[in-house]
Image (cartoon, rainbow, N blue to C red; front, top):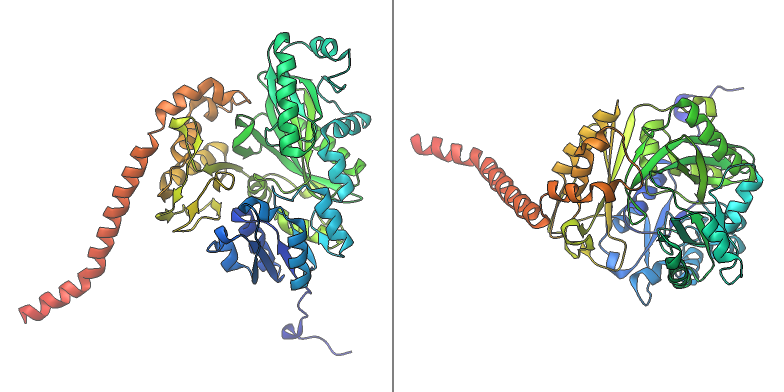
Length: 503
């Protein structure tokens, strides 16, 4: 038998012949980067408003889609299926948002013989229905918050809700992203809150069912990353997501400063137990409420890649998108729990087009100049480009700045420095506000909970310079830098001319 020489080593076949990214912005670029690494041909869909986006330029193929609005285009299942058929796509990665947790999309792809890079439609339906998910988790013997999931029209509903003790929170069964959620602090507010939550739930999710849950104060929001192949699951540590505004995450970190090794083992075992009981396939996140007493309660499960997944990747050295692709290609889970150990600390800041000094109203404008931070331990995931029009058509998230350090203080210091280096001219951002949060003594001590921004909001706003002042300062710095570079570039020619004149 002839021995194979090094140059004859077979190149591994790609996991898929072609993958379509059914998303936009930073997450589309993130997935495309992974596809290039794995030598998988790529395609992306785009609305005309994203024609000049980096994702369109970086994909092997790009197909324009249309809709009544830009967002509607990315939600058009039939149109995306048509693109898949036209391009001969073998698999689709939905990213997060849009169709990422839409069972109808996963089912339609399956019927067309196309792989959905994520869990099955049945698992999405189970975990997407928060009432059903809570019942499923409780059946596994795991704790869920005290709640009432009777129909609000039931004669015993009000009494049962009051028995939880106020405050309570009304939630949409099909909800997410803080939509359809209302805190009720006394009994006479309950009826109105139920009506508002049901209306929001119907409008955003097409499902008006709501339930009532005890509202905990001083609570932490801890989530556990899981990966499953349908038979076995592992967890890739936890993330602290307590710094929130109106139920929207602002800063995330891994590991949590409140979780020790013993608690990490308990949380991880609970998350893995849920994933394995559901025969989960792909990447998912099990979210928990964590009390000051060390108790934890199941909150929900997100059946997709999370916005904050980079902090886990930097701390654990795992490419979560690559693992999604391998699992979707029917490869058995290759990671072993005993080998998944955290290394250092990572913090993610969500850079948004919004003005904190003006009630966090979303901002619009054209990106006149862009400078993203670089350096050891710094990662910037964004879909930004000079000349980009930032509109109200999409979520105001512009990008994610992630810093990794050997310790939590080191990661905080790197993140603060990187925020100061970030320049986005032409549209206001929350960069200075994010820096003020990281520099706050309570954050440095790890004393965060879901009411952190409510408690320290005024102080944080006073520490963050007004957006207009930041824009003026950055513009001045940009002009000075540009003038300096022009002079530096001209100096060799000036010296040559001066030498010729002297001669």
